[in-house]
Length: 554
Image (cartoon, rainbow, N blue to C red; front, side):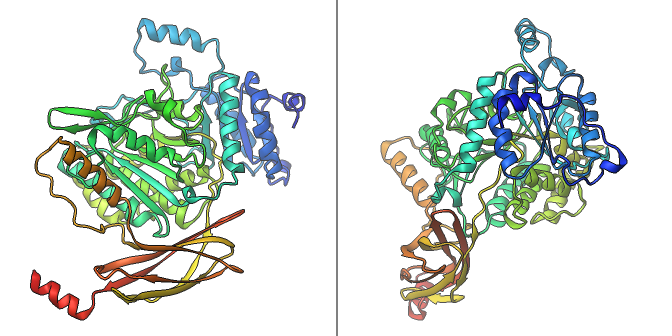
């Protein structure tokens, strides 16, 4: 679409009449975009139009209520599925903003650049955890019928200039046009801080982490964990924790997930006796160089998505920076352990089980399930029981979940397509004896290099973890940290590469003699235009004589 044609699109609200309802040519995408940004957005509009979307541009002037009314008018045509807000929020619209000289200067700047106002809703639960009384949220724009449940997928491209928007659009298009079908497409990286909310709340955070990693993500995907506790085998040398966090981001992944404390422009600190080491901040943005497989970031933390403040938050800085994540799902104020645990499970269900096509639809349906009393997330009943114990007086778990529907926003494009892999169907035995050969075969709809692996289950390690009762900064100790961290993130017991032929493969793996317990056969196929992923459970049994000897040794 040419710039001239794009600029010619009407800026007025699209009126709807009864005969307009369910029109086949009705727009499915509403874009609220200031005129100054439209030339920079033109390649995105052209790309989405060629995918089959019908895009309507709406005026960005006026209040949040007026913009919502325009979106509501467009939705009456019956096809609206996506809403894209192009521009940062105006910090002057924040009723809780403090008045000071620096902020006033920022507001003066804001009057000279295009902005899209956001909504502010009262906090009922977070305020008991130290949050501000008002929550910045774009969710009301997506609530088309006013019942509190979002009806459309929504995201915000938080740019201040046309140049920033061009960079954001370039990242989005590069992501969807990528022909790199390498290992990043099966990888999910986790970075976790230590809770510090108290025993019950920390238990909820730990439960969320385990649930997302073990229960929410199919076994065919490779996960890594970088954990900010010096006692853990998943902790790299503490002085190198920040670099390890960047390395995981830069190696490329489908999702990069942070769980822990957060602030507007930085994440928590790894604390060791007598000192602390930073995990990540906006100062590290320039070191993010994920040229292949820039991940979608999920921040299960406070404030990292505070997009309505005068200084850009961590998620905004990431979105507009080359090599950083292509989108971020994040909270705008204080977030709470229980609702985040439930929401993370719902997000995984929508992505990996229901396989929603876009990140916006994943978030939309996860939020709708979050509002349900039962939902679909694993371990929901257990989390609900914990919530009843830790919920502030006068509030309920349902209140907390509803508040998180408002708290979490997408800083990015809701139409961003998730590069789902196709399924590998594996025919493998349920049991195998250690020291013998494991023979299996499989089928898929992708031809290419097939990586087959025998891996331990995610709740297990291939070694006995170290018992760290005392922190030791010696060179020998730090070398041990590095080695245990590497091994903790490598669950492989054996692997090899084969080729698929007509979508079929067969493989034979030597099972190590010292293995015992639940494992997976994991398969990843890298084709020219697609990838395929699969896994099958297999239990490795010790030889009878070996098992007797091991029992006697105990």
